[in-house]
Amino acid sequence: MRNTPSTLRYWLLSAAAIVLDQITKYAVLARFEDFERLNLIPGFFDLTLVYNTGAAFSFLASAGGWQKYFFVALAAVICTWLVRAVKKGEFGAWGSWGAAMVVGGALGNVIDRFIHGKVVDFLLFYGESWSYPAFNAADSFICVGAALIVIDSFKHKKTHGPSEKEAS
Image 1 (spheres, helix red, strand yellow):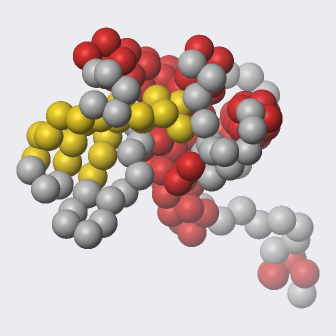
Image 2: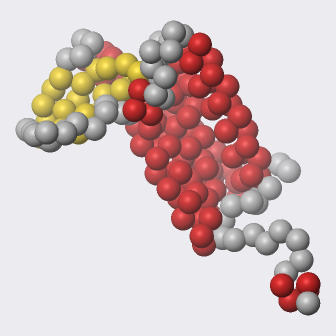
């Protein structure tokens, strides 16, 4: 179980996701005051600066502070499992790319939790009567990566135990 040139490309994608995420967050932090909004597509998309102490959709955001350590530990466990699965060849190509995206996104948000104590969010999509919670590049990598892992699970099925042919 070692990094080979064939798995190195996945870790380069993870690193690129982290760098892209942190650069975009740095740019927003340098330009915006808290809760400031810049309307880019009227009635649909703004850049803003908000923070999330919780997870997706502000899950556990008001839990009192312990959730920071919980989400860091959860990210560590998930990233460790995904790295191991890629190294062992447990995913097909789509799943390996997806795992790399999830790892990069998760680590991008972990960096925020260590530096800021919360995650920096800045992409805000909305309409007349609806608003999607603000998110960041790391969240996008996580969502796309998770979707790729699910797609891969349908395309790349591993058999566990004897096949039907061997069992009969």
